Length: 501
Ligand code: AHR
Image (cartoon, rainbow, N blue to C red; front, side, top):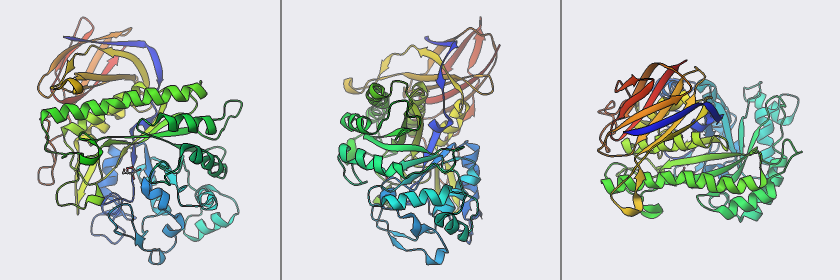
């Protein structure tokens, strides 16, 4: 029996819905085919957006969407993607598969997509190959309501009303595909570019995201914070957020490994590598703390997830991969980590939303399937806008190799906007279920509801068997002397929703 302890009287921070954010890039079949099919498509759509995909994402409560990249962002020139579609430039997508980018999905289409989804917008600007003027004009085009050249151009293109840009990234991976810059060089460029990311709407200030480190590049964080952070009394300093990118590659960057064919050793290796996210957040966070003691700057983990070898027979530049129970565990573990660090992590965007890397949705022509990762996001949506509660679970180390031992369980607990206590837990063991005794100190348990996602480690959904892995109602709990006693199945992600008084 493992003990779970929840202190319902101790709230540790607010869980931004954006911790469950998503990322869409002009990459492979993410935008084209996956989200956008155009008005004339035989696939049911609204203004070109697939109805099935939009409905599923709304059902999952997508809070925010990042676009247009990724590496694509630092080669994207936004004016290529506005105006009559027949006049838009056709060009090569140099980063991703060398395919033709016809720019039929541009700023207006992205804003329309977010309108349909009812989610916040996160636009990533081009610092690597774009000019300050270009970035500045894009912000003016999107957000300025008065009389100006860009506002008039927007109106000519069919949108009189300005849009809201909630988050704006000033470059992406500028240590790599976004210009191969040194931290000092980027930091100075960042200061210059962000100056012209104007807040035209003071009621809705743009949250500026500075490009942060790749994995454990702590020197990048140090140098960028040193140069770009402005201590109080500057209320709106140079930066609101600093990004972090970390992908889980079980077999390293070169080999990566299959998404569906792996043994137990690789299972534990993958989960061990995923758990590294905690250390990264804490170490980068400690550097940020040196400058930003009040934790005003958010850590924005705007790319994370599994990155496997692409599915055999698909374009390697498209990064299309299947999604198994292993991905579900990766999602559950990371979302628990983000919740537990919600005092610093203000947004996280899994890569990428449809048909690319660890997707929540896969499509094949008119067909669509929901992946195990989708079900985890839906279960965790109960944490959106909730208050994190102090919690702790006893664990033991499990695994097959000394180097890749992992705790059997991870958890996070919050008090939701519905007043209920939401417990999410992952069981990392391939074969063992565990009995848990949960103490919710300070409350009386009235009612419990549960949802579980569990299956064999390779289990996944396909276009011919789309419902192999689905979240199910869970009834493996009882309340004994005001303690919540439950069994978490092997290889599972569990959500318990507890009504209390
Ligand atoms: O998500 C795929 C790519 O990974 C992104 O374009 C880039 O930012 C990262 O290296």
